[in-house]
Each structure stands twice: as structure tokens, then as C-alpha cells.
Image (cartoon, rainbow, N blue to C red; front, side):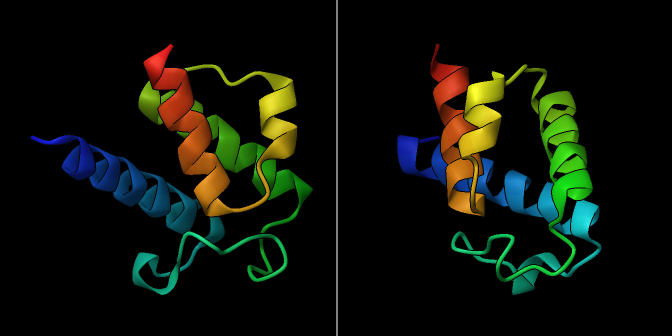
Length: 85
């Protein structure tokens, strides 16, 4: 599997998790979706999203990273960055 395929698979998994947390259809989400475009993306669901991501990928994101996640693309980038460490 190539790098692009792995990145795409990672993004798909993150979107699926976000869809579960926000109780939305994954196909309706995009990398640019954020708390401004997803009504259910409030502070509590942000924590639920981070917890679900950490559990799914068996990682722990630093608080400074968590605070910078402002859309789905940033979440994908944070997971990718953590997995490369």
C-alpha cells in the first residue's frame, strides 16, 4: 500500500470516528468541517472525539496538540504526525 493510500485510509478512519461521535453520516463530512460547520462539535464532544481517536489508534495526543485541532484536517494531521514519531 502506497503512502497516499495509507493517508487516505487514515483520513477515512478519522472521518468515520468523527461521524460516530457527532452522530452524522460520514459521507457528509469533509476535511474542512469544524466546530463552525458541525453543530454538535462542542467542547464536550471535542473531548469525546479526542478520546475516541486516541483509543482507535492507541495513541496519546499532547494537550497543546488537542487545543490546536480546529477541523477534521487538523485532526488527521495530528494523528499522522503522532504515528510518525
